[in-house]
Image 1 (cartoon, one colour):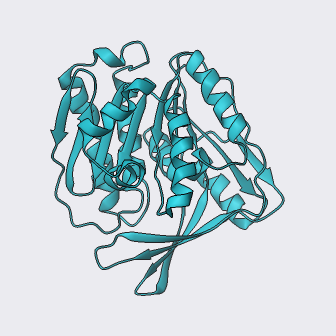
Image 2 (tube, rainbow, N blue to C red; image 1 turned 45 degrees about the horizontal axis):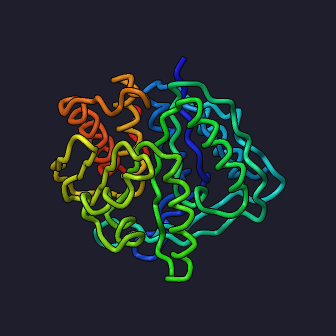
Image 3 (cartoon, helix red, strand yellow; image 1 turned 90 degrees about the vertical axis):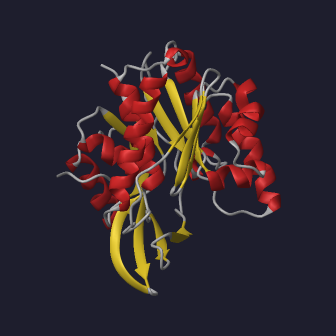
Length: 297
């Protein structure tokens, strides 16, 4: 059976509005993606680490309650990761992170042909465990798993960006679908123009580039297709998790159309329209709610 793996940090988000805490949400980019996939019944495993604390227990139960497999979550004696999310008047979030006091090595599974892997954000570029992550992705690529990468680059100074860009370039060599936000690519390359970016990265073997930009159209570039997709206009309750759920949507589309490494270059325009449409739908639904994942209703 085809399996989906998401790799990333688990974070407990304490949400502030007008400088007052209003909610606490179990999150993290890859976790948000996994929860939405689990809620629609897809076979998804989450690869992460959690402390042996109350937040860790809450997170583990939340994952299993939403259909996410947790066999590859490493527990450690220490505190789980938390963040503070400060919402502005447009309900966009600015984050302040409190990192783990320990970073034990992750537990990676054996992947098979046609499996899908989604990775990105902090865990994709941190030094701790990087060798093991790249080994896992290399093996998965050799086994013909389809790999989706979302850089999710935070604001950094130029010295940090030099190191980040080098690691992103290494990650791209093991990526088939690159999906990022306009802000990600502005920070990485100084441009968000899809054609310009694709010309920079196509030699890495990227099969598709997808760029999201808030309320602006989504850009898709493949060697065979260049297209923009308008999105539904919504008044957001919160934008936390929008990009993560766009990822869940396109993975859902790949799963539905049985997309793999061998056939992704043969996708028709109509198939891409549906895949991007599912991504936009998932993102839109999350923006209408106060949680980071699609509704169970």
